[in-house]
Length: 305
Image (cartoon, rainbow, N blue to C red; front, side):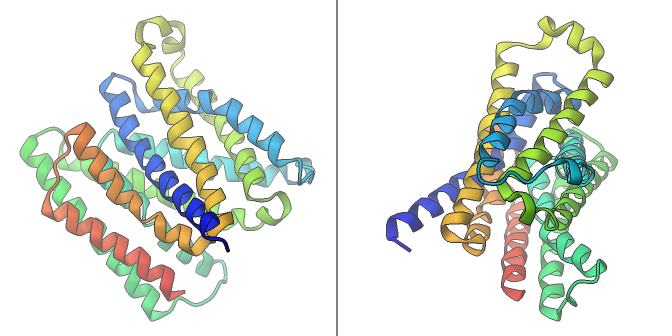
C-alpha cells in the first residue's frame, strides 16, 4: 500500500469518527432550542433522505442485486439499525450528558459478540470476557460520576439519569442486532448500498413518526423552525450522519477494518472534549477515568478475537 493511500485512509477514518461524535452535541444544542427528540430526529432524517437516495443509486452501479426478494430483511435492518436505535438514542440524550451517551453507545461491540454467541457463533474466550468487563466497569464509573453531578446540580433526578442510560444502552443493543443481521445481506448488496437502503427505510419510519406524533408542529412550523434549528438539523444530517458514514467506509477500503476500528476509538474522547467546549459539561476525573477504561476495554476486545 502506498504511503499516500494509507495517509488518506487514516485521515478519512479519523475525521469520520470525530464528525460522528458531533451528533450528540448537535442534538443537545437542538434540545436547548426547544426542539424535542422526536422532532430533532425527524428533521435529521428529512434532510438526510435525499442524500441516502443518491447513495443507493450510485452504489447500485456496481451491484444491481434486486431488492424485492430481500425487502423484508432490509426493512428489519432499517428498523433496528437506524430507526429504533436512533429514536432510543435521541430520547436518552434528553436525560443524560453527551459524554455519557457516547460512552454507553461505544460498548455495542460487546453486545455484537454476545449476540453472535447466542446465535451459535464461536465461544467467548476468557480474554474477551475480561475486555467486556473492563468496558462495562468504565461505563459504571462514568455513570456514577454523572449521577453524582446530577444530584449536586439538581438538573434532573437520578431516576431520569438511570432511564436515559437505559434508553441509550437499548439503542446500542438495537444497533448490535443490526450489525449481526446485516452480515447476511452485505455480501449481496455491498456495504455502501445496504447502508443506504437501510437508511432510507429508517428515514421513512422517522419522518412518519414525526408526522404522526407531532402534527401540530408541522402545522406551526413557522413558529419553531428558526434558521438556527434548520442549520443545526442540516449540519446533523450531513456532517454528523452522511459524511462520516461515507468516510469510515472509504477508510475501511483504504486501510482495513482493523486499523479503522482502532482510529474510531477517538470517538468517546472527541465527544467528551466537544461537550466540554460547546455545552459546558463538566470534565471530571471520574468521567475521564471511565472513558479510558471503556476505550481500553474495546481496544483489548479487538485484539482478543
